[in-house]
Length: 483
Image (tube, rainbow, N blue to C red; front, top):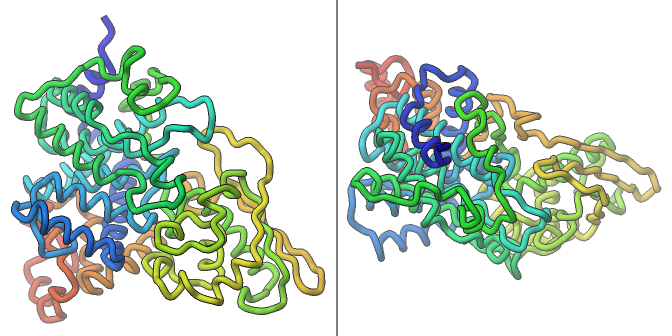
């Protein structure tokens, strides 16, 4: 009898060894970790951070698990919820063929690694397990129509959290399989058609917080003997049905597991808005650059952005977003912010820019047109920007694959600069540099908690004297002390 997918996943998670993995896969895991930590820290500039702090005070004020970037501690599952919500808050977190896997994988992995004081190599192995399992489940879900009635990435991203935590807890193959089954049975509903595509995008978005929380709980339940249905992926009542899909490509679940790597398909965003908009933004910036025209001048009449039809429909065609959540999905707003060279990140959500007359004026000159081509599942959102000047000159630029996609990756220096911009306002320049160095060398770190001490708020940042003193016992500027 053929093993169930849950059993195959259980064997894979328990048996995964960092020493057997290609160098580029391990390097990609470090990039994913760095990018997610930066997004987490950057989100502290949003009012959402205060909402989450109030939530923790009200419902979960006790516990030993640190909420990274703050001085607060809480229970494990609540910490994972907060971390996942923060990582995704700016819509600046990593991208995959679908979804934002790092929001659930990294949040759960960091939370539990801090709780049990894992090593850096253990953390990296857990991260890779999370991306591989969740990616395969997500891509196994088949849909007859691109715009589904039922849709939600948090529903399948629960597997990134549970796989990562199961690996950190060193569960045996059967425990890992049960953890997967428990997580599947408790995954959040597919709610994006209301939370994003509804009347108004909301901070609930993809339910990544609940997915991370559920994954953490599932792994600890399995550790203590709780069991789930090991045939959770198979048959007419399998997980695909729970997730609102039209079917399941069961071969996609486990074929090539351990030989081909989903994490290689992960990309990173240069702009803090929906992945669907990245090509439209980049084409618009390029056409103004080619024309040598300032977007703030009166020398152009209109910017026409021709993009997939989804960009021309709600919520992406919103011409006047009134809050941070609507702004993340508004093509005219995102294009205007990039053209005005506003630094991507928290500034894009500021009240000043949301209600700026200059931004409103520029958005009024932007027209969205659907190119009419049908995009295959997983295809890039290619865009053409056409600039019409007041003297009837026309300039055009096309972006077929946005910078930041796995097929057109950002350079490592860009990722480092993105991290610095997001981290420094929260933890200061010194700790940001040390944290960056620590993540670069995380594989050799014997204690993840040594690294996580760098994630305190800015007022506790080490000054130059403390840094010099630390250099005497650490290996140079690296954040990880050698034994």
